[in-house]
Length: 320
Image 1 (cartoon, rainbow, N blue to C red):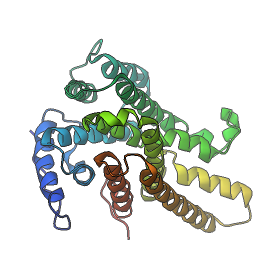
Image 2 (cartoon, one colour):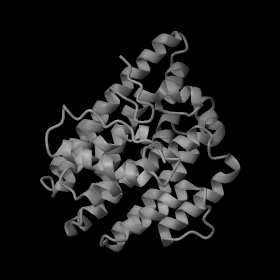
Image 3 (tube, rainbow, N blue to C red):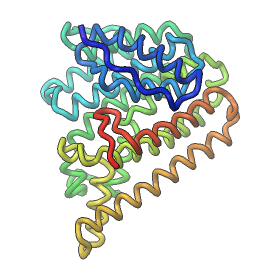
Image 4 (tube, helix red, strand yellow):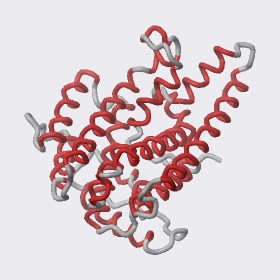
């Protein structure tokens, strides 16, 4: 059994956020005992995020949202760190997608924590009523996410160096961002939350909420990459910093590497702020702008981008 980790410092949060986080920490650590691949040392930021996003939800709903977040972070980390061999990736993805579609696996492996946890997620989500379109969006978002995580791991050389060789006629930044919006996990997490809100009016405004989710994901992806690009260079995982830096250098071969890096960081920070602002604009214009769904997304994009300015969700290594 894993030893419990120290609880997050909640002194800066007001109730009910702090109490929600305490409850979710207890519930999530108890859940994770069955799954050795899930590291409680990585739970802190995810606990805070769910508590800020949906503090008034029941414990069961907040736990499921946190489990989904943990699954995303763990799968992404295992792919990036090479802990899922390339030879197994296709078969595992097929099994994971089967679980999300049908609620069962064709050949579950007892030592595949990710699959067993996903079976648990699928069983829990089935307890909540959902329309066909909402559930299909949830399934589609999952497929897009896992495919994008695998694609991003293997697309590095082409995107970093010669994108044209991969048949990419647009900028490598744009090509990457299309996938990176999903590999960050935000659309799938939000699709889960759309079901858990149990709000029948979501169906009518789903296209607008999907657009909001995309912009929210763009902002969070940029915040993530600005925090993690040094670690991901070591892992040889491509991100927006790497590809935009390459494009700037291609257009300005006379500048030194340090200046190129500084221009890249500045430009991406500007794009992040623009995406945060656009997310809030879209939320304000939504027919449900005052509903818990939209107001929660507003808190989510503000908190997560602010959190990334201080910490990495996976490693918790703050930089000055």
